[in-house]
Image 1 (tube, one colour):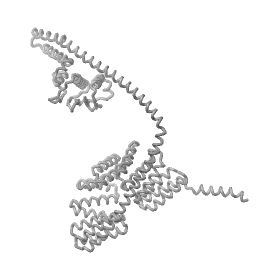
Image 2 (cartoon, helix red, strand yellow):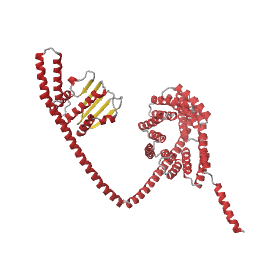
Image 3 (cartoon, rainbow, N blue to C red):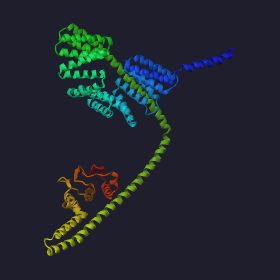
Image 4 (cartoon, rainbow, N blue to C red):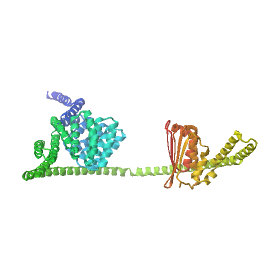
Length: 600
């Protein structure tokens, strides 16, 4: 009988176990509820318990995404509770379980690790970490993560008093938030920039950004954010001597913070109001404000606020000559200061531990890598040898082709120059001579006839073209004169304004360089006059150290780059630039004119 019952008992237990386990939907709902309740109530204890239950249940059903989600939320709660080392451990556990590079949980864990390191005081490690995360996020176009990195990097640099760097990262954060039309993010950026200027003692600049932040926060309607910015503005106004404005803003902030139950904020506001009272020699009011602040600070046991409070109370009583009270508060101040020092020392120890653990982990990874490296060394050497042989072969092929290309290019340009010179001589010795003889004869037989003047102009143009084409003439001329002849400035169209900028001491001794630069200028102006409908052309030559810089601009209709590349004229220009080993930049598009730069 017992033997028959045992299988039934085991089966019943298994059913109970299965049904005792929570479903994926239930655990996910539990985590989401915990997040919502935490952000509404800021009760970290309840939230922590919820996420620990979710971690336990998701581990029982071995659901990795839910485990990661629970760990990330536990990391968030730990950082909120200032348990930074715990937060670092939770986030690291989550990261170790994530295989997908481009996933929200991965970037949440990465950001959390950076925040934990920063809060532990490992600023160098945190900054390098955020730089790496930003670079990774950039690969996947994750603007939200990039923004968070820039903001954290700005906070780190501000903490290190590297204010220029802090402003740089806060402004980069601002640019992305502005592009996203994220009002809350822009307001946050303005506030951070204002805080940085305040620490730099550039108070007017701080006020400008605080006002911008306040305007946006008023649109959002978040009272906590409005109160924070108004408080910052009041501090700056007090330091600028605008006491009444500061006092008015602080009273408004104090009322808001009391309604919201923001005890820390209330103490901060009371401390600044007490400073104003002291500045106005109203010590009685200052004592009342500080006494009220002390009661709240003791209730919440906030060490940093207690330190500020006791220091102010010591100063107020000392200034009134109440030395016993001043001494009593000095002792309290010293005790709190020691406590803060001990906490900071503990943080430093934790930071060193984190750095040490990180280094240990890195060393372990290095050892494993060395082992794997040794195993694969022979294969790598073989691959490297094969790659080296292949690279040498490819290099030889490229060099050979380049040599052939260069040789053909030289022959092509040399042939063009020889043909150009031959045509120039033919025009000058034959056509130009015949035209001149004809013109002289007609001048005698038909004086004062319009056709005689036209024939004279044609003869002059032919002589000009012959000079323009004759490479040898160009080579002998000074650069300005050669350029003027080649562009035929005497016959330049009246409707096109040509501006040529050549320094007085500008000269080019290299024959090939001079001829090819002038030919490029000729080709560019010819294209503009034929096709661009330009009314203004600007041509500039400069000598920059040992290099020559040429810039050509027209205000014509422009054209597509693909159309430019197909033209024979552009092929000639590219050939000459390649022959000169120059670097060129072309900027043109329909309706945007033509812009060409060349450095040789």
